[in-house]
Image (cartoon, rainbow, N blue to C red; front, side):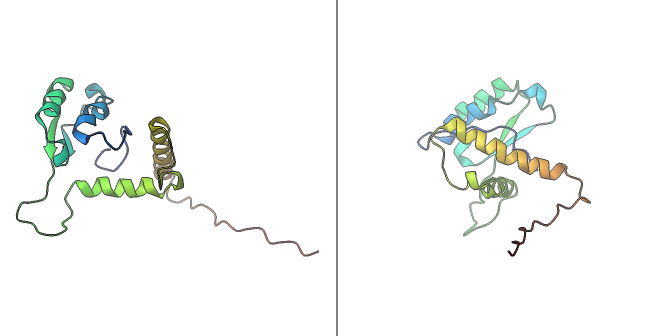
Length: 145
């Protein structure tokens, strides 16, 4: 996702797949020519491995670099980090879609599709002009016989 929280690519893997190992699969969906303004890919400590950094440099021809966002060493307790709150906020938006609130899918490709459909509705809502409010929904009143 980008810094606005809009989904750029999605990959769903099994729970036993390490994030750092699956990272080339998700970043491999992005073409550097399609994203010329991207300079950094933000990640947490799980993605901090030399193999992924080497793969990223090779894949992006040096255009992108990995920037690890981690909690300061002297910090105790919860502290929101500058970039990671965007990810958590986007996960909350995606989780609002009923189909994405729990893991209903049996296959990873159908999970990816449901996430894409959910984020499409988010993006479509952003495209609607702000002056056009949707009409209030009301159930029709029963007709008395």
